[in-house]
Each structure stands twice: as structure tokens, then as C-alpha cells.
Image (cartoon, rainbow, N blue to C red; front, side, top):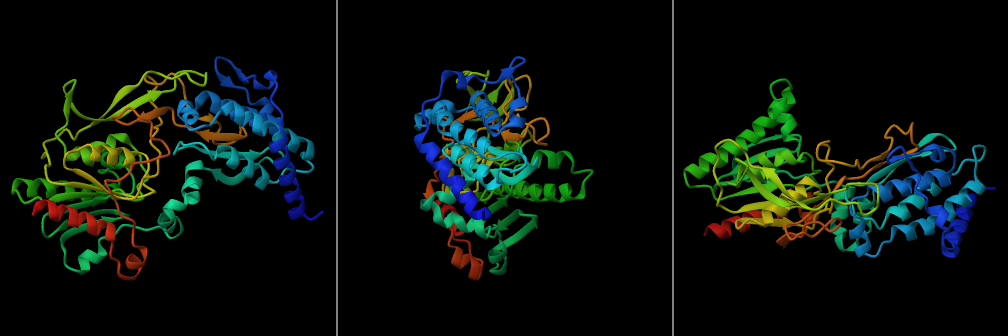
Length: 432
């Protein structure tokens, strides 16, 4: 039989199973945990049903926002009911001599994970019949961006990947000083507006290694130019405003806050150190689905060395690919009296992975990234982030103060950046 036709028939059978599946028996819901909470992956290696059971159980015990998902209408028990029969059917149809096609397994898991809101979650799989890695990562939040027709402009970022640049403004003689290295960009506009763009929050590590790695030293110098320009202009009372460009920023280390927004703020005294309260965290505390800790304030460090408290407008630029720490930073900026966020709604991936063993009772990630001890790996954040209003906003993202979609056509033909233009206009209007 033609392989393509065979795959289509298989998908039709699975669809029928999903429609006609009966209620699960109580014995199906036995969570396969042993040894004080460790997953038993024995069955996961031997059958597609076993692999599914381990994945479902791992998510059941590790995922940090099940209450939030239930609020949005998703019941994880119903997910089990919906898919278990499909994987049993695949076990009847395929074996080592007749391996299940990767595309069928991926299609089922993508459909199963699609409703989830977590912006960090991703899964990789091994085909248990071929023992080969399936070369597709299942990332629900990225699929959501592609599926969301209300954000069609952002698809350009996925297809062509917009990169922030100051080239247009340099050519037009608007900037008197600038430096750039691998999308880390510093620029000082002639009228006292200082710009800093960074693609990820990895400055802490860069600064620690700036004396031993030449590339890190160059990135540090870009940040140093930005920081010193702000201090000098502030001292001269000629600082008009600051632009922090977090478009396409991939997130990263929360300690970097001190070198970006935290380098502009006075902060509040907490235990003798200066911090900025940016929200709340709630951690996963056990293997039961709703085993969560109480919420606790999330404070991020303020730059500890002498620096100006910037009262001029601070504008943060964001887009749909601004995620994680870039979203926390933009949300913090929105709370400032002089803070303003421009661009498009951010990605919606706030929940962090906390690695401090003294703070975590339960570890989020499930499986084996090497796909040896387990035929799958799921990266799951270990905590839920809540806004200052104590609301989980995972999957929703930060709504800017002012929505401005990138004019891709203009940018592509002239290099002009209408989102950055609007930030400049906003600051200049405030200073009149």
C-alpha cells in the first residue's frame, strides 16, 4: 500500500477513535510513580501507550499552572480520556517490524498539547519502534503564534525574522554615537535620547567573563557606553529619554534586570539591598496536580553601584517574539510613572525555571534530554509567574500601552522602523 495513503488511513482511524472513545476505567488513571515521586519509564520504552502514560503523568505532576488551564476550560483527565485509546490503537497497528510514522505521533501530541498556555514548554520525542529521535520539537506557544490570525503581521517575524537596526538613523545623521555587535546595539541620538537593544538577557554571564573572552568584552563595552551616556546626560540635565529595545528578545537570566531596567531605577530597600518588585511567584511543591506553594513576592535586583534614577520617559519596545525575561521587564516598565511600552502583544511565556535547590521542593522537567533513560523529554517551568495584580497571564503576554505593528514594507525598502519612530515621537512630545 502507498505509504502516504497508509498514513491518511491511520489518521482517519485515530480521528474515529477520538470521537468514539469511551470513559476511562479508574485503573487507567494509576499514575506510574515509584521511589518517592520518580517516574517509572519501563513501559514508556516498550509501547506507545506506555510512552503516553508517562508523558501524561509527568505533566500531571509537574506542570505549574493546572488551575489556570482549568479556568480556561482544559481538564487534564479529559485529555487522558481523549487520547489513550488512540495510542492503544497505534500499538495494535504498528510494531518494530512496521514502525509507526513519526508524523502520526507528532500530530497526536501537537494536538494534545496545543491548548496549553505555558510559553516555555517544549517536548522532544523518540520513536520507540525505530529508536530514533523524531526531529520535531513540540512547542505549543509557537504554534499558537502561527495560528493566531489576529497577529498576522508577526508572521513576518517568523518567516523573515526582523532584526532591529539603527542603520537608517545613522545614515540620516540622527545619531552621534553608536556601537553594535551581534544585535547588541547602543545609540545616542543627537537630542539626548539613548537607545539600547539586546537579543537576550545573558549580560550577567557576559560581565563575569569579560576579562577572559574577547566577545564578552565587546558586549560589555556596548552596555557600558549606554550606561555612561545616560549618567552623563542626566548629570547635564539633558537626558530626554531612554529606549530599551526588547523586540525578538529570547529572555534569559533574571539577574540581568539590574543591568537593564534596574540600571535606571532607584528601587526599594529589602533587607539592606535595593530591589524592584515585579510580580509574584508560586512554585510546584509536590507530585499531586494542584500541589502548589503559596505565592511570594518576586523582587529583582537594582544595579548596586551609583547610578541616576531616571525620571525622563523610559520606552520599552516589544513584539510577539519578546518572551520570558523580556516580558517581565516590559511589565515592570508599565508599572513605572515614566514607563511606556510600544509595539505588539508579547509572546506570553512568563513562568520561570527555578534551579535553586533551596527554593524548590519539586523539579519540573520530565524525561531525559538525551532520550536514553526515557524516550521523551519535556521542559516544564517549575513555577508560575503572577502579575502585581496577582493574576497569571501565561499565554496572554503583555499588552503594550500603545500597539504599533511593524510596517514591514517600509522597513524592507528604506530601513525605516516605524515602531522605533513612534518611541522617539513619544519621548520628544513628553519633553516639549
